[in-house]
Length: 138
Image 1 (cartoon, helix red, strand yellow):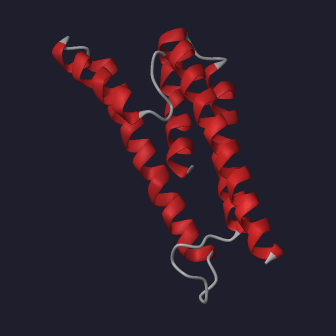
Image 2 (cartoon, one colour):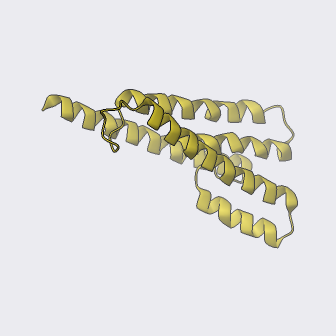
């Protein structure tokens, strides 16, 4: 039916936009902060390097990124559980819920740049924790 096709098409569009956002966030945060907003594997590697180099500030940074990503995942999972209609199958997420989650993810991304601007260069790196939260929501 056309309704089912519209749901599939809108789902693909949301997925495509979220993929573009993830690529942009990772490129932006890597270039600006030498950390990844969404790629936790990269942050885990950087964490290992920071531990090996006894760099406490970087250890805290990378732990905060992984923790914020996890908090974003928990937030999104809770939001989906609360916003999904009771009669909706567990695998189906309504388009309105997906759009709300995309909006939730965009706010911390905007705040990342706003928070980093007035801070010193080394302190500004911690602003990327907001991006990690947003990517966890995604």
